[in-house]
Image (cartoon, rainbow, N blue to C red; front, side, top):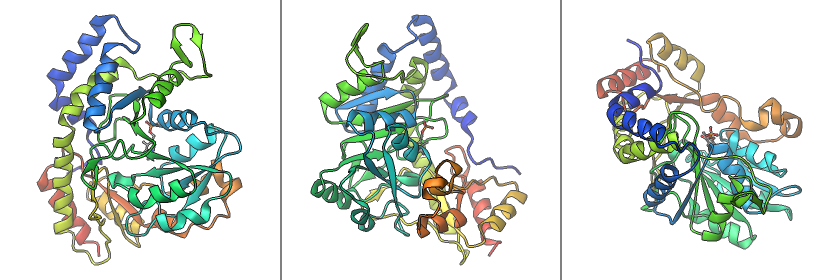
Length: 364
Ligand SMILES: *Cc1c(COP(=O)(O)O)cnc(C)c1O
């Protein structure tokens, strides 16, 4: 038996006739940059996220960079970021010329700890980037008052949270700007790169549309120094189809996670905690174990592929260690040593999930 961590190809095969049609439609259209396909996806994605505006961009990192740019954040500014996240959250801040200021997560939610944010605020702080890590919404109602008090913007990195709900509402329109990635492995994944930003403010959404397209609002007129960060219409066409199945596929992921929650009884394994305020998107099922490497090896020997999200926190990466190497971020350090992500692909069978739970239990 071999169980891959994520089976993206099965996602294509399940929807093959529809996707092949859509791709062929784009190829025959003769329109290969922006156009109707991208606009149609933006409209559908905004509706899905329960927000007035969605702006397609080239990828999730660009989505974060353009969010910061649109809010005027740059050189000399500080942006609070979680210490436990994918490095893109930090890189976006750096690429804007600003400085990331890490804050450790809460040990239970594993999202940025609202109680630790104020201590990290300085006169230079301009924004907080909140990441809904592993698809679990952060407690936004605890973060918003801190931002208001200190006149900070809030950007949500929702790259792992497509379809998640916070207090009943979809992730997508709570904060100033919400950034998305459609990297193939995300819950809503393209067959290549893609990204988007959602928001409630038409002025900001128009600015984002200029920023992603060379700062241009009409052809050959460049009002601001923009980027080339456009959502590919081929990917938009694929995403339009996959969006229709997103709730269903998230529901299938939740089914696998239920099996794990009910069946894993290994006393050395810490299971994820679902906060009462959230319906997670179940992007990743991340357990913790003190002998993580050994458990991962045992699962590997049984043919079960697992991953670690993430083995090295950003402040320990070579790219950042010169500046942050001495930073004291004990929760992030501990998570990096203990976390392990089990397979929860929407194309994984319940029987296989049961088998995985059994192997986890056998390695107490
Ligand atoms: C995937 C991811 C990104 C970056 O997305 P790309 O599309 O790969 O650029 C940013 N933040 C988080 C939390 C992610 O998981």
